[in-house]
Length: 158
Image (cartoon, rainbow, N blue to C red; front, top):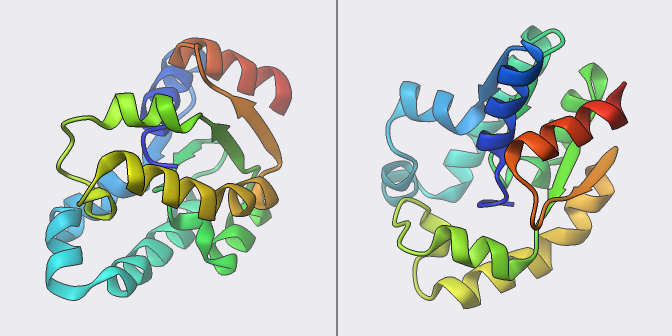
């Protein structure tokens, strides 16, 4: 889910354990421009197609690394399949209140336009079971630092 700390945890994991990490949203922005602009010009489905291509690419080329995925990536079963073929999917489960607090003032997320609390609660209620179903490991993140989460992941993966 957006705002759960995927990028920060991936960076902490890299720092702590010397493992390479990539962020699919960062790759998309680098190659195609800002996500808000992609959504505005082409729509969500077009963005999801780009996201799927990037997901498959990094899943097949990043050996032993960490991938910070966009929050909607696991909504497509083909992405889940590609990721599970090469590694484990970890769901950073975070309460809506925590996500809302982290995302206040963030105008870069197209799915959150028009009422942050309502949108976060709606998206999370629709996606939580999908995230849980896709996950090999679930980490509850509330009250933990990115470093603590990274260490917890390491313990569960090894």
